[in-house]
Structure formats: structure tokens, C-alpha cells
Length: 421
Image (cartoon, rainbow, N blue to C red; front, side):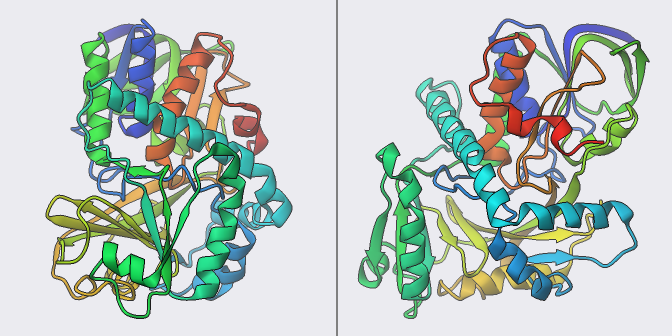
């Protein structure tokens, strides 16, 4: 079986689906292949994550605060960030780069890019919702962050100042106001911060809807099709060998999430990505927990999102390679974190447990750009915990790269070569 296409996208998660949508919307001939039997597979980073569109978050994952806590957390299997001990030169190199990126100067240098990606991502989600083509549970009611101490609440309010010039100010809610909005909140919650520019969406639905809209525009989506190897001629990827035959494409977009790194190595590209396992637990939504506003619990290190009569509690990062094994202690940690803030949540019977692998970069920014070694290869991966928020803007950026158009966001901080060897 031989297949010719103008653009071949490898990966059917939120990034690949976003690329397919924006490229097909621009009139390009697109084929998307996904190794699993469905778009947005259950083992990927999107399927049952929190679905936060948190435009207000300006900070990359590596930061002085994370590094300060890290040594206490790293070997604790119940902690928010757990690194499973194992002999791995790649992991050791990644952790050293993460430590370097966690310095104050490095974090500050990344913040404008995080802000730009978030602002553009939020705008594109609003556009998709206004088009009325996509049904994915998009809801822009803001996100309410809860805090256990007055000190943490006031520090969070101060952190909102960089957003002041956008006109989207966070509202500081006193404890009584929080209890009016969230009757299930525990008595020791000191207050909250409501960020009105934030939203949430069903992550599985939005991914599959983007793929559907792409097919409506002529894209071909092939599931159960795994990329196995590449043929290279000169400075071009001349063919992609898959479980469903050989594909020839004018442009290849590598957007396979955590699987991007091993595929890139076949092309002699080294991408410092670590699979980071995230978890979520779904429970029946207890009385007193709102059905329209997600809750972020920074001190509990969890996100709480309502989906109808269910509540999804998501959180933790676990660096244990490509293992998808569920560690019960991780689930316990998530439920305990939510239970510190909300009555009836920590003890609720789990209805469903999910885990998925996120592609984590050491500096908290994704890789989006052309390969310096292959003129027709574009890479889009490494979206850390922001794949939903950054998905549509990445699809648009890839389209602009392919069409040689000015990018909507400065691509220099996202270039592959910044951490590649």
C-alpha cells in the first residue's frame, strides 16, 4: 500500500488534531495517522485531563519554587512530583537541564512566551466556540483558585499583576464569598482568586471535534496506523514507513506526543523529552460543588473540573519512563489533596481512574518549528501540561510555518535547536 499526500501528520492527540484542522482549513491536503485505534487515545496526555484553558497562568513548570520543593518530593511516591529511581543517562541529563531552567532568570525569560501562547490559545478557543461548529463543552466561567492561608492568597493576588494590562483582573474572594460559591468548601479555606479570562473544555471531545472538522474540510484521518521508520533523501524525509504501508509527503509534521522523541531519533534528532505520567480520578459530584466552575487547589496540587454529574480530580507528575502502570499511592495523593479543600470529595468512591503520558521539556516550553536537518520536517511536541490550551495555537503556528507566513507567536524560544543536539 502506497500513499501520497501533501502533508502527513504523525499523531492524533490534541496537537496533531489541531494541526490537521488549521492546515485543512487553509486548503492544504492533509493526512493524519494515529498509532492507536482512535483519535485522542486513552493512554495519551489529553483523554481525561483537567481540560483547563488557564490563560492566566504565566509561569512555566520549571521555577525556583518547584526546584526548592523538588528534593523533598522527588523520591516520595505520594508527592506531586515523583521521579522513580532508575539508571538513565537521559533522565539525569534532563533533570540537570530542568534545574538550570528553574533559575529565576530562566523562568522570567520564558514567561513572555508562556503568556503569548496562552493569550493566543484562549482567543482561538473563543473563536472556535463562536463558530458554533464545535461541540466540546467549552465554558468560560473562569477558574476559582482556593487557598488555605491568607499569605498564599495575597501572594497569588500579587502574581496576577502581570495580567493587569490585558484588562482581565482577578477577583479576590474572601472566605465567606467562597463559601457562597462553593458550599462544600472546608472551614479552614482562607479565600480564593477568580480569574475570569480562564475557561474549561472536555479535552477528549475537543480533540475529536477538531479531527472531525478537519475531515469535513477534506483531511484523511487514519487510526491504527503506526509510523515505524523514515527514508531520507538528501535533506528531505522522502518516505514514512507505517503499519499501513509507505507514505510520501511534501511535508511531514511530527506531533506524536511522548512518542515524538523515539521517532525523531530515527532521523538522528535528539529531543530532550521525558514522559510525565499524569492521573485523574472521577467521582460523583458532591452536593455543594458547583457544576459550572473549575477549581484549582495550588496547595493540594490538584485541579477539580465538573463534567455534568461527575467531578474530575487531576494532578501529579510522575517521571517513570514509558510505564503506564497505575500507582495506588498517586491516586491517594490526588484524593487527599482535594479533600483538604472540599468536603465529600476525598472520601468519594472513584468511578473512573485514568493516567496518561505527557511530553515534558526541561524548560517548560514546547518544540515548534522546522528541523534544521530536514527541510520538509516540522516538529510540534513537548507541550508539558498545557496541551489543551496550546493545542489550537500550535496548529495555527504549524500552518503558518508550512505556508511561509509570519508566525502569530515568536518561534525563536520554541525552536528545536535550543535544547537539541
